[in-house]
Image: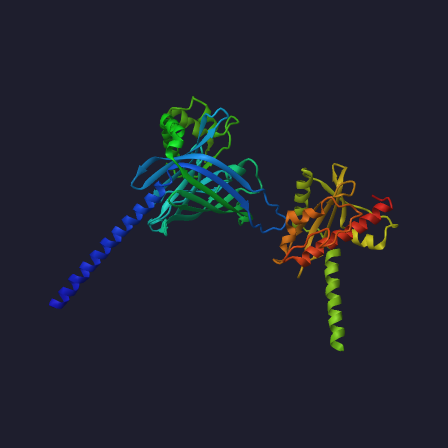
Length: 308
Length: 181
């Protein structure tokens, strides 16, 4: 009897210790994840490179390579235990040496997020919730346009090996900005997103599929593409103009984010018009001072959302 | 001795079969779609019409055989924009479809592989390699390794495409020299 008691006691002790160790390990892992995500904040020299690689059809003529460079500031604008929001800004120097700041893309990282929207096609996103099991230990990256409208969403696990934190997933998305107005021979980009964070830089490597998607038909692959975007850190002070710009403008954009959150909360498919009054949404939000209060912004965004 | 005769006969049947395939091709909807797409890209116009060129009896028999049913006028609402030759040529184990487009002066504007049916030798479809034919006229006689660079791993198809353009230019020179184009 004594032996049985002793066995049960030891088992219980071991079991409790194991669970406690597991919880600690999970907590430590999450801390490493957050550290990697947050280290994307900073002032950067950015290089964008894209080249088309393999096409299934022999008559496909590959597009020219795309290369570009930018000077960018990325700032954490919201943070909780389970969420980090990073806003990117372009800093463009004019001929007289002044800096023009352009609010650029935004990435939201959320831990174990179940409510997600996936891109379907033709400027339409659909709500596709995930189970607790599917998102366990994973981070969802949501990428937004310059006007905070949706672009694409992916969920995956961060890994931390040999001084490199990495996260990889595949996500359907609209055409990238560089091809948005130039291409009509495909309508969905299936992005292979590989984010690799190192000490003084981070790399956004992509293996993309350019896809033709039609209702009731199998996706057709037009061509594949390699993307290699590098973010090399420079002193934060170099990006002071962008930091100042955000200090003066963050309140308006917090309102814009809230309005979009309300749209997502409906969990209905979201289809967006490309233009209203012959203008894209960002043109209204960037350049029209009329849109600074929540009520006006709500009305504006509602005009872009196609009623379902 | 019997096996030699049998092998020769088999080879003969195979070569006739390939030639036959190349000669009697029909424009399938897929091929037609690819031709339309290629012409639209070249002329930056949609809804171009292809009209088979009627060859006069004075043209050599070989020329007739090469061009008949494969050589077209490219027209935009009745206006002649150029000429197109659509045919098949052998790759290593199959045949591929290609188009060669000329301007109204019979200067080669573009050669393009439309359908390729095996993995080996697909490199002949690259714009960079095919652009070597651009600008040739009916007097040119391209040869692989001379006017046209070869491609490692695609020797058979590269030679086949080069020979196809070579023979096409010979045929067109015959037609042109007799004043029919």
